[in-house]
Length: 231
Image (cartoon, rainbow, N blue to C red; front, side, top):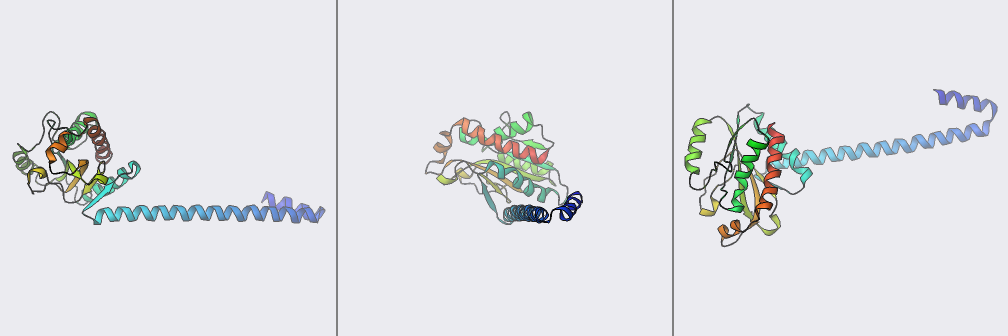
């Protein structure tokens, strides 16, 4: 209103300058309008892409993540989609053993969730008390009996193609613990797998040759993701 009043006074006293001011103001407004429209379209495009990624995760049996910034939002979206259905309690079961460096990812995650983050969920499988190939059948039977109505999140290490090493994989059908021994039994409603090494004809040797520091880095990522969802 102030600008319009000033321009009106200019029209009365100096018509050429008034026309110049009007053109200058119109140009500034025009370009501001273009910039705002561009920002709105870019924001809408990003929101649409984000929703599309989330939908793909929920539709597919498995989805891989490499980008640190992409992990947490989509893990949260997937877990919320499951847990908000019927308010079932959450139980996290981390498979693996500290005796083999590559297979120690599960126990590391379990200890991180309990000791570092103290998540409000039952956690089985830690560095102190692991759920491994020797005792997993007994543990799975016990967990199913005690937490029959729970939503199970299973965590395990995995081998994969060379270009998949280092990726974290989410599955909506759990995990297959002790797969290297030929066992096909799946466990869990949601599975989190970390590809710690490349597949080979000797999977046990591959798991034993993985750097513990590398596994710890992946375990830290998974632990933080789960903490972000559960806390």
